[in-house]
Length: 171
Ligand code: ZN
Image (spheres, rainbow, N blue to C red):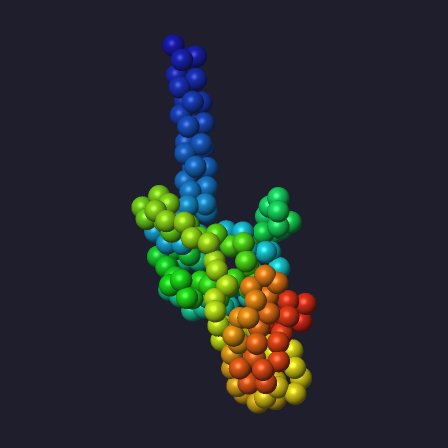
């Protein structure tokens, strides 16, 4: 009789530990509603956060970085609770996270998946490679026409020079 009580107690404790672990894992890995952005190159995580203005939102933001990813080497992931993005906004990260994938979450379920697309025009984010360009000498936001997406080529609206993928630097 004593033996039975003991083993029930042990089972109860183990059950509780498992439950606590599950809850902890859930808190980190799942969001009830919001957006998960996966496959961000680890080195660009904070640029993505800045471009999307995630340092300004009210919802909870969690992120992980230096996670193993087959094709990207090291990747980062962002989970933005109660936060959703317009396509135009999310496409702003395409230059620095071209393989990013979005999962839109409602009530813990993925209800929509999105990939980013390089937009037709890019405002800000990138520097014009031409040192003489007015955008490099005055407080003017850069503005480019995307003339090629692969490889990337951006035509500056101000000096009309083309910034190529190997000259791409972020503002
Ligand atoms: Zn320029």
